[in-house]
Image (cartoon, rainbow, N blue to C red):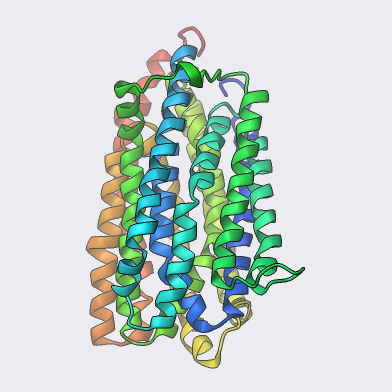
Length: 451
């Protein structure tokens, strides 16, 4: 972390995560691809469930960001016993998160879907899907927690194995459980949810095994564990802004679904398809991001300003390049991408301009993702939160609503690139502030021991 050439270190840390994220994005696409074979209503139901799934990801990933940042910093400062306690408290928080979503799934599924549509078939499909995903989310929360422990100590190769294994199992089980192949019961939409949670549970078991047998930097003593208020507070000081930031995405998606379904349920299905497809572009950037955060945190703890700056510059360059490829794919192969989801003529008519217009925002998004994660890694999560909140709630949703009322459905999609340009300006200003306040003063520590 502190001595390997930065470019090589970043690639070594990020590449396994990028590969595993691509595989994970692939199974997201395959999941909806098979669901779309049932009916457009089934695809719409899964699309409407996305805000809850996104909230689940927000809580798990946000807590993981907090664990990752302070654990890596503790290791950089040579505080090994503190790192062990951080890991144990992180596992505890993952289990509490599961209990919360168990309650949400059981008690809130029907209410959630009834708020969005009166179509009974969509509601029933959605309840089946959401109940299974939430009630069996123990695998997801344990998987993401134990993977963050591996990432924090630089063992991202093993996270590639866990995520890849879970995704492949999901892909294999999807058609078997949805359509009832090999004498299995035909479960429909519920089969897609079951395939997802089975893959997550197996991936979690693998992640636990790798931590116990391969991760020598952390020693877990669960039998002696006692919750630490100070450590939990420290994890959430970094993680809560990330949780809220991602949760804002759930609010935005819920609001967009309400705007779009007022035109037609097909528009909502298109929006759901967009989120599945864009994950194939964004997931590799998030993989790069996950490789970058522990490098920045470790070298911040070790007082190495030059390595931090170089890591950020390289990450921004790689992220922007990935996003540019995404724009070219979205513009060059739009009908083919929608065809993956059994798109009807009306879906193609709505979806082709939608995907092309939204994808323009990718050009700015790579920079924004990296810079906001740098803010979080250096303990300024509120800055990230403010950018996300302003972009999605103050700018994007009102802009989409106004465009929907004044220019119709085809104009709604332009709200995304408009909002991303606004976020770019905020992110650039915040990066300048972070550099002056946190990174530049480290120059004075370059000659200290362990630098």
